[in-house]
Image 1 (cartoon, one colour):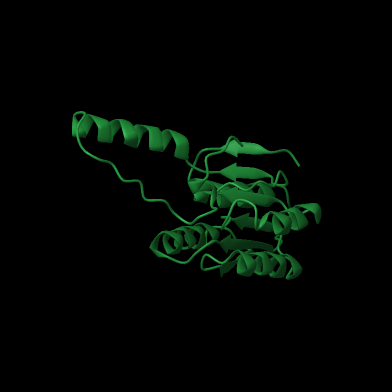
Image 2: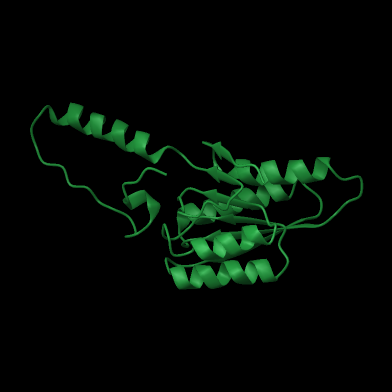
Length: 172
């Protein structure tokens, strides 16, 4: 499968998949999309709601959601369960950089397209990556803080979940 690097909202991933497969078939086929969220919070709930709204525009699309509550073992189990349930696409926001990579690999190796969004994985077995440019956002925020402080003051950085790609400096 060919990989595409996109810098767009999560909704693009769902729209891309649904349109690609609905345009290729004459008969109405059911498509099951598994969504593995790393956590459950207002941001993730909003994303899930957006995906549900988009899926409503396409006949035969079923969404199955799982939330790992920041637990990588739980997310690994959930991804495997989604794959075993017969999904046609996996959309995953990895909890941590490395911990869920084997589950992502297993899904991809079974021929299931995998869209990784928001957070990176060290797996190379995915179809597309959808995210904002976190490095560039951080650089711009840093410039803004420097401009507001006028060369004086202290800055504290608050990190997210230890081990997630958003808290690790890397070059993937």
